[in-house]
Image 1 (cartoon, one colour):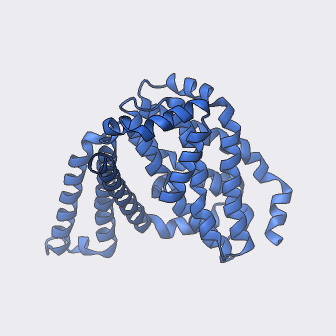
Image 2 (cartoon, helix red, strand yellow; image 1 turned 45 degrees about the vertical axis):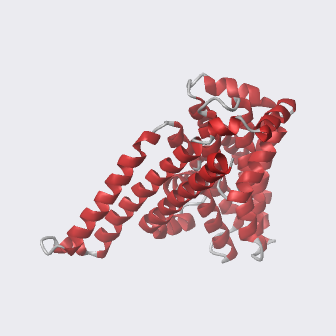
Image 3 (cartoon, rainbow, N blue to C red; image 1 turned 60 degrees about the vertical axis):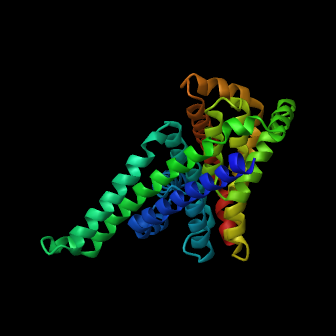
Length: 323
């Protein structure tokens, strides 16, 4: 069990998270300063905030980073609480980009992407050191090309990590614990919601948990309804990082974390009775189970965000800025 399940799972998860962090850091280096300025200038209305939150999360590949940044801005009083609500809604939509890419089943491209990114890094180093291209040795050109190489390398690691985690599927199906979990989930899908919430809270990455579930589901080990329940739970679990980031901060920062939690909890409660309907709807769009899981997360987050968006325009929301 250790060599066939635990070790590949830990190794694959470590590779996946390393790739995610490399992408996050490199992308933030490319556009972090501009993003900070945009967050301050372009959140006049909740709709503006939603669009900005979606774009920035899709760019940075991390809803946690954007949420934590929003809490920091509110704690430093550079942004009022009411102007972060749209951003929080947008982060849920933007985070779906990673799972949608994973759902394309392009894991065979992991090694070519890694090789190409290393080659790009090498070329950038040669050009920077070369006297034939003195203009390229400028700081901006250096940062851009090398950051792109790191983003590609991180994406390659992400795909490689998922492929490694997928390898546990056949062995996992044969364990008693897995059989017990499937038996329990047939009585109530709340087991799936609880599992998704706990795993995401522990790993601090809903993308990693959903990617792991997509990998296992790819070999027909999990029913789609259970996978969707785990997705709902992972949306709740991702709030743990924001709650931790708000501890010891201002009341406004704590309200940002609370609003994030309430959005995802009520969204999960709203969709839980309709998991079967959601599963049927996404199966109309694709025959691939991993893609269906990715589509269910996207559809769930988009609907929840546009249900919650009108509430963000309520006048009592702005009064909380003075509390």
